Image (cartoon, rainbow, N blue to C red; front, side):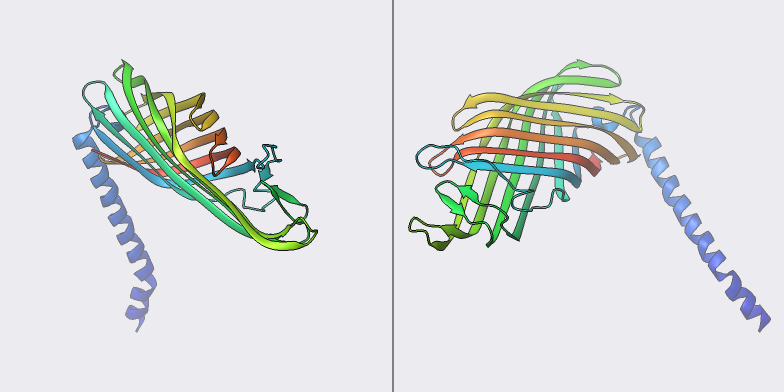
Length: 291
């Protein structure tokens, strides 16, 4: 009986040692895989392809104005305050890169965000030619999607660094709605739903700089910029990111970045004449795949 109890007493210790041995074997295999395939610099600077997938935790700001039919400019609706949308939410984010030729590359980025709320209006909200009345229940929401593609060329390439310039587009899809009780001409009220949506590309120029601190660590940064009056849009766009990436294994890395996307444009369409301002900024944690 004492032998059985002794074995039971040491069983957690035996299991713990087993887990430790397995963990060490996994780490050793990753180290061997890395050592067997490393090129001396981080894969961001040497491999042909990379894909980053992860979670973006942005602090969000979204506001818009919808001009009346007579052309008057309405006050902007602040969705984090007037519509009570959450100011922060996690969203899926993905990036990719393809290095081709000696100095050329194609890169991209995508994320999408949406939110909906029901709340009691504390003050009137004016949307085009209708007024949503204070003191009544209303519902509202906003959707935003961004797809970035960027074609670029390396201009300064060293053993452990690279710098380049390029041009690309940000395809944007922006939509919003409010529904609730509105005031009508005879002084009465009615229920109404008002919505807007716009989608299209914004061209931009950009630059980036990557530095391989070692074969395991890399520092990355990029900056895109647009400021012009093109077609149905006029205004500015910036998309900025910097961070570090740690190579866990030959084809696998772990990254942490600060991302900032800022848009302030006027819109001139039949379905929406007004302005939208939005900002997404925060940390982006991702797994990286290289080959």
